[in-house]
Image (cartoon, rainbow, N blue to C red; front, side, top):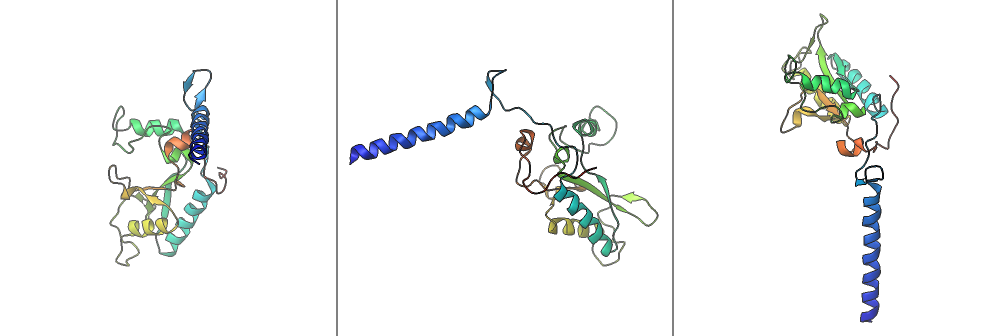
Length: 190
């Protein structure tokens, strides 16, 4: 009986080793001889679920008397790098802490918003209550966005990004870089 248990344990150990080897082999690139996954180019538009939620956010906000403007959606890595340079190597305020390829915008999974006033001006005022219901319009938009499945950059503990809304579908930036994509929906056309 002990011999059968040892045999079974050896078999399971070998299976485990096989799984580890296959996992490592998945990251192996013959040209470099290193165990490194190759990055996959990001999509070039918003994911359809994010696009739908964006449109619903605009509609539901309008129903409350709040006009939302989407100031940014999908960004190329070059556009992200240009934003990253602001307040660092170029004039302006720091608006992002991540370089190209490190933002959910680069994968079509994030949008930024602002509020549009009756005179056409666009503002990022988190205290305005233009619909006069005793609640800040900004936070009403955030509440709608969260109900639609967005995560809000204002909830982050380090760099607060108040205009930022994203849906990461449980995927990390690293997973997105290596070609993982959300299962639901396809990417919208521009």
